[in-house]
Image 1 (tube, rainbow, N blue to C red):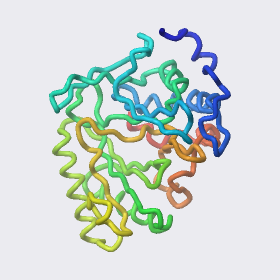
Image 2: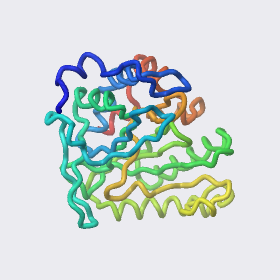
Image 3: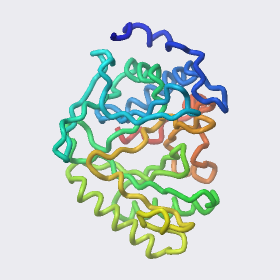
Image 4: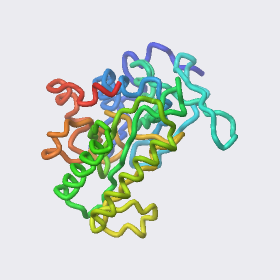
Length: 283
């Protein structure tokens, strides 16, 4: 049965359900977080198909990724029909275009929102290029920051305007806005060539090797998100990790003080009260 349309404006069902057991963060905390960041998050997610990552029993239990909107989602939740290149039937992704939808998803224990790099108006042409810097566990933050700075320079040398995001996971994203006049294959080829050049210049620290067992202790420069149907973590989305960190856009000059999990449920509202969105020009 469809839910009462007014419920997610006032609060979630089962608000005391613990979703982050190590931190005692409850569904109410997640709901309040997404209400606090709704303006910034929606600005980046609007018109982009979203893949959900839901944890009905909290992050201590197994969650799941969800592309197809559930049949029980109310009709008011916007959806986009996305053709599949495999020839399979289209997938009906949720669109997070308004606060009501975002809070409904929070009530559905959706902790992570992953957005496409293109919009529903033109799914074949990305509006973002993204490089994911994925370090092994033992890489120090100073070394990681140094590589991030290098890749930001590489982006600038390619004519991109580099934008930085702490992923809330292990690493950082370097992203750049696109005009939407090139297809995914062309954009991915350019970003991949840039990454491979950087790895050749610094083979002791960097790699583009797809197989984990071949990377050793090097930072993986992942260009795979620049493809039709692929996603990146949405700016300001929580992550399903202890501490409830969040993906956080950063000014480039903040890098020296930041780590991939500097901000999240406990301190994002304070950050946004003091600082405008560093990615405000990307939407």
